[in-house]
Every structure is written in structure tokens, then in C-alpha cells.
Image (tube, rainbow, N blue to C red):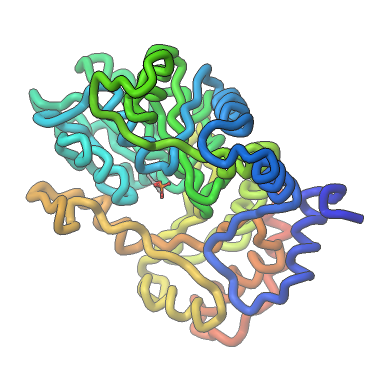
Length: 407
Ligand SMILES: Cc1ncc(COP(=O)(O)O)c(C=O)c1O
């Protein structure tokens, strides 16, 4: 049997069995023969730069998945954000409100335009932008709000849209971490004027490096396409009315993207199953807070993340070190951006600071097996009980709890 004929879950077994593991990574992509075949096809066709059938197909299929009309592929998620901001005319003298708790790319993209990122605190439950904190940061220079769907949980888009409309502000989604997440069934990417996704190797689908701007506005999409290609009008070769960029995605990247997009539903289902298994096993562990899923919201659990606080016997960093000794990788939450040297600000964001000190991303790859999730949880339980070498079998409690958490 070839891997093409295997279901995703058979494929996972096959991969794991074929490759002995002594270390559980935080993330790794799930790539198969479809990706290989598409890349081979692109290479053999000679279309390896940005012209090529896979580019337009990937744009069309990914935009359709988000529920919008237009997708403009680019070479990574950071430039997708920059292109979106620049296309909307954001520049020097403007302020853009960004959550304090996010990856630095969100703020860097604002800075590239010459505008100033202004940091607002996040909600303690969803860890995403708090609309009340945004309202506090408004100034006459505020032009836009850029929420981030952190670790896969959507930001509160209905409230943020109401605020943006009331104040006459633009709204751009940083959806780098949340492909397929939704609010009342409407997916991320379909809420802002423009939205930016990343397809880095650790994202829900990957093209190696890659990104996409999506929008329902054909004029804005055309503007992004123009700017992506040195602002050269397709009908006027080598004529440039303004300074543009080379932000194009290659057909090789898009060839991988088309194969990944075909796996999207399986990947999202697997990630939710992994999250439910973690939640079933870790629920009730004193001092551990599990990730939220606000009613009506669909969290895609890009990173299954927990908070560690007393009475858990180990502090966050000590827990990460102990897990590493048990061959389990993890990541700390981002530092609040207002604490980083290029962005230091006087106005504190206390919730972002607390979360950044307590948060851990647990292994979240779609290749993670149930046995690995159970092992990780049993190590955390054993560490909680001060008995790190006694990873007792949690199988029965997981089985009982799964029923409650798997709807
Ligand atoms: C929230 C957020 N925004 C933007 C990016 C930038 O994406 P990329 O790494 O593809 O440039 C990332 C991820 O890396 C991210 O997590």
C-alpha cells in the first residue's frame, strides 16, 4: 500500500512507526506524497518562480476556505501583514493598535510602514485583544486595529468591528496562527478589511515559508497584487508609478500549499482531537489553567497552551525544564511586546505580562499520537505530585473525560 491510499490516521501510525522517537517536538509539519508529487510536477514543468498554476490555484482554494473572494499569496506572513497595512495607506504619523501579547512580527509589520504600534492589553480568558483596553489606547492618530487570533483562538471580532465602525478605524486581522478558526461559523480571514495568514513550517498548513492576504474586496486585492510585484501594472511592463515590493510566493511553495490545503479538514480535526485529549487528561490539575473556547467561538488550538501557577509545585520555567528532561519540548509564551527594547512603553499591560510569565505551549503537531499526549499529561501529573518518575497511567481518566470534552 502506498501512503496515498492511507487515511491521515493510518499515515500518522506509519510515520511514527517508521521513525523512532526519543524527543517530542513542539511542532512539525505533516507532509506526504501529495506534497512531493506537486513539487516534482512544478519542477518538471519549469514553472518554479511566481508564475505558475499552483499559485493561482492555492490562492483560489485558500480564499474559498476562508469564505472570501480573493487571496493574494506572498512569501511569508510578516510581509502579508506589511502588504495589507501598506495597501490600506497606513504610514508615518499613524498609530495601529496591536495586542501586547503576540509574536513580534505583528508590531514589526506596523513599524515597516512608518506607523507606530500601540499596545493594548489582552483578555485573561481568551488571551486575545481586550476591546476595553483598545478603547483606552485610542488617540487622534489611531488609524487601525490589528487583532491577533492568538494560538488559534479568535479575537473578539464582533466587538472590535463595532468599536472600529464607531471610531472610523480600519480593521486588519493577524490570522497567522488561526487557519479555520471561526466565530459563529464565520472563519478568521472573513472579518477584517484584510487578513494575513502565515504558512511557516509550524503553522496549521505550511508552504515552508509563505503567507497570504485575503479579502472580500476585489479593488484591495488588486492593489495588493500590484504592490506585491514592484507596483508594476500588468499591462505596462517596467512602468512603476510608486515603490512596490517583491513579496511573491513561488510556484514551488504553492505546490506544497495546494497539497496542504487538501489536508486542511483532517489537520483541523486532528488538532481538535489532540486538544480534547489534553483537556480531558489535565482538567482539574491544581494550578494548571487550560485554554479557553469562548461560546460560539471555534478554537483551532494551533498551540495547545496552559498557564502554570500556584499551587502547582513547579514554576513555569522549572516545569519546562523538567519536561525537557522527560524528552518533551515546549515553548514559553511570547514576551509582551511593550517590554522589548524596540517597543518599550510606559503604559503597562498587566494581563499580557502575567500570561507571558505563566504560559507554556505544549507539543501540538498534528503528527502527535494519542500515546504521546497521554505520556506528556502523565509526566505533568507526576511532576504535580512531586513524583517525576512515576508517570502513572492516565488512560482510564482520559477515557472517562474524553466523552465530556469531545463534542
Ligand atoms: C501572530 C503572528 N503574526 C505574524 C507571524 C509572521 O509569520 P511568518 O513567520 O510567516 O513571517 C507569525 C508567525 O510566525 C505569528 O505568529
